[in-house]
Length: 301
Image (tube, rainbow, N blue to C red; front, side):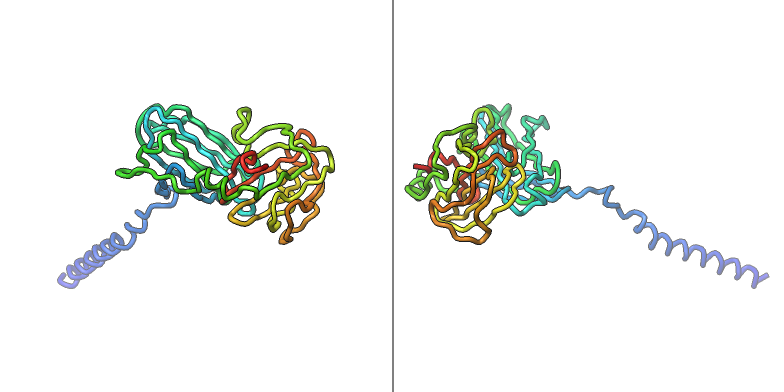
């Protein structure tokens, strides 16, 4: 009888001990959340009016930015891409401007050829606005985003006042580039859209009239950093100049230079054509300062 009772007690103790260990070892592992249960959220970064901010998108990532706006302010969101950083120049992204109450105020899909350009004339309320940037196709790669508010004294982060310092003031840039550039073509007529044309605000260059095989030349001394098919740009040449300047020559029928080649002002780069997203022979020409597109009309003689 004694041995039988002892056997029962030992069996019960072993069971309880095992159950305790099971609770200690198994329950936490079952309670661990999976990746789908707890999605990772990246904190939104602040946008400062006048500063160009940089981000990078893969094929599935999403970036979120934020700024403080006041009722009645006008907002402009300008974007541009950094060639060679994405899966292709035809990769696209989508930009949403979202009000404090969650309402989508503006939305646009863009690519390196036609970057998103959002304009909201009047913000509906004072508060925290969000800018969501997500890939629409491919991996867009590195991009820059610039915010402009109609009233630069509006607060951007709590307790601060924005001081636009991201790029040199227009007058400073003009003075620095005075006499630096020449026209890239013998023709100076505009055959299509201009910079931020009212009919296409996202257009970031000049469409200069040209006939097939017109010579296209470098606007200043520099080094060729891109000379190949550029998606919507067609055959594209990009020249890097001193002082953080880049010039773009698109829709070429033929390319006459190679990457790494040094070119002099007015040296032949290629022949005008109608390759890529083009409705007829012309030269799509861009100037970029510190990566940001600027109006070529301001800098050409």
